[in-house]
Image (tube, rainbow, N blue to C red; front, side, top):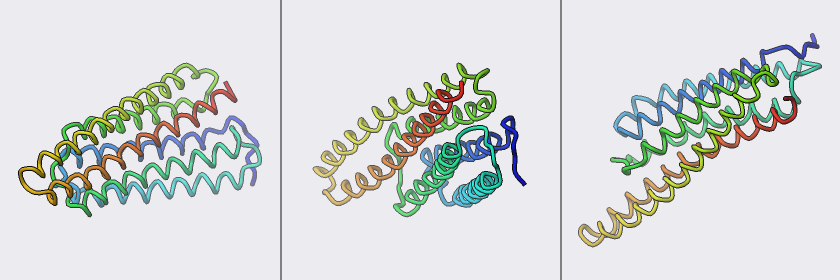
Length: 218
């Protein structure tokens, strides 16, 4: 009933599986941001990813409950599992907002922001694949985590710039077309960009958790 092997890699395999779902969700969101008309086509795909991620998370929790000895701290396993599942939920929420708002054309650099989420989740996949042998792979894992942190910093700059552009465009548009139309576009894309930026922040949060595991066990 109990697992006594510290060499067990199943937890890390399950982490990697959910990181892949997070990455696939980011790819979907990136596609929809570039063409919001695809949102309704993609909603079933991201719902499927969300369901699959929840199933993997349940497997992790069940295995944790049946494991007497775990390869890393139980608290770390539980926290990482939850945050990975939350990441997929966040992307689903962003896509739902695009549909709900009938978002229309995106801001100029919105695709740059979603591309950073795609790249960050890809680095998470790389890091989790390496985590089962943390001593051997310490440098590569920390390199992936560093890239995620760098992407998050770049994303902050893009987010702030685009919000400024939205407000400036709203002021100019209001002069020509009236305030209501401009303000509606501002509200829509301010919220959507915030969702994307939050997803990027979430990648960094998970990366920081991975760094913490490396510091404990490398």
